Amino acid sequence: MQMQAARIHRFNEPLELDEVPIPKVGKNQVLLKVAAAGMCRSDYQLLDGYFRQGLPVELPFIPGHEVAGTIAALGAEVPDSAGLSEGDLVVVDPNWGDGTCRQCHEGNEQLCSSGQLVGFGPNGGFAEYMLAPHDHVISVADQPDARPEYLAPLTDAGITPYRGMKKLRNAGKLGAGRTVVVNGIGGLGAYGVQYARLLGAGATVLGFARSDEKLAIARENGAHHTVNVRDKTLDDVQDELEDLTGRRTVDAVLDCAGSPESLGLAADILATEGALSQVGLMGQRVELPLFPFVSGEKSYFGSFWGNHNDLSEILTLAGQGLIKHNVVKVKLADVNANLEALGRGDIVGRAVIVFDE
Image (cartoon, rainbow, N blue to C red):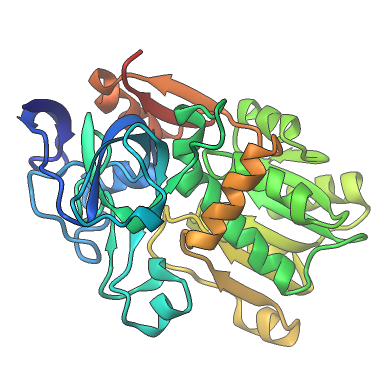
């Protein structure tokens, strides 16, 4: 049997919509009928070759790392203890470690140097069907009202800023009387603002972005204040900060952009003992002012994706109705137009490919 899939045949060229065989399920795998696949800026970057050295893929290749779907078939050796059944709605835990290294033993499979990231090695969810190891899918069959287009983005856009915000919380940078900025209100930042409120213990939350439309999302999702940083100098931004909070500096920044401009701004507005947690990957290098970071005992945290427990926590919060989603539903046939929009930064919220609608 055949399925439709959007595949990379050559870098820096549009994806091609192909008819390819439905993959055969392995003994410890599940075959998913994909219901929804989130579209990430990193999918655009994969296509333009950004990850060619660090995450090489064999072409032709199916991207898509944010996936929710139903189980179409179970491998012969999937144990009953997995609690999976055909027809279950599941999400894919996208980080598949080798199970042997220290990072895997600590539960951080996304950091495994010998592991695989679905959509960046194993074929992903820009297709009608995909394979996943049975121990890397999480059933949400107990959430009868769950919608796949909301579940899929949680596996990256939802989980990544959550882990980054937890790093700031665990470092003691949040709390009453403190100020936290979520910089870059795109697919990740729209969730990040919510986590700043959920985990912030009373911290004042600001959203920074370069468009008023995205800042409106930040306010809808709980930001106390917002600042449009487009074409503004450091003094301009700090003047607004002072008007809004009474201070020209902040205690914590979750950077969801990763551009030289956003990181430079974050470094410049951090207070003494402030912390920057970076999850965005638009640029290639991080350059921080050395003496201010040392003399002010400021901290920089790289934060990559999230682990199984992070994802389980996010799914629980979503199931309790504590997470708001900003989703733009699109069709597989329109994948290239939406990838181009992602590259320009034109998508407000998260674009999600929805099947069978």
